[in-house]
Image (cartoon, one colour):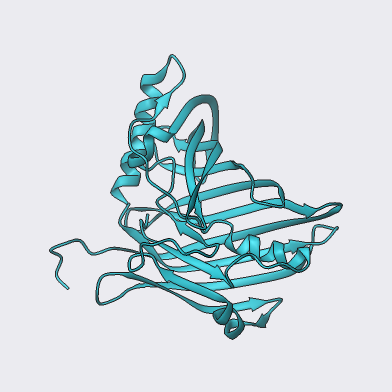
Length: 282
């Protein structure tokens, strides 16, 4: 999974105006977080720690083995739903990620659609994509940054993870999986200031190989004006034998006073490549 991140800013802060506009921007930017790594060992809270801990360790090993992969394509589909739970506003963003001559990942917004209308030029003026490798300082404006390395499976962040193996098992995508309940303590950086964030949910691992197939969790605290939120990560094996994040789906409800809006979004990742290592031939 790619360790690099990219930041998207929209005119400095989440815009005002009506709830529909605020919610649309929220969905588009919700998972663009700046996160700090942690180190240590995850803890299992049950007496039968050894077998489940070994299975969890297999998941960490899989994460480590695939940590140099990055997607060349990212597509974000976000929807504001009407009172019949049908899409009232649909926004699509298409990004590409490529390695430049200096070995840095460069992200570009290639296309943007709103209700099937092309708004690419408008979005390029409003959205700034910052290269975090070149600018280590956090911007003064409110920005949110994606980091695909932020995960309860990241070996370098295990001191912030607590997990408990459940007896529940489920067939997922042709794999017989065991459920793990987990809590993951992390941080976001907003306007240069760290804010604590907790993921609480379930991880589904192949009961033999430890291959992670699915994460589903809630966040605490919730973003401003969001009343409920549920996030799902889906993973897959990409040929020849790469474990990659396939899709992130988000569903929830936001509102102000007596106005409520349901929303959902889907972020898809594709065309994974490995980052060249030092000494690789160019």
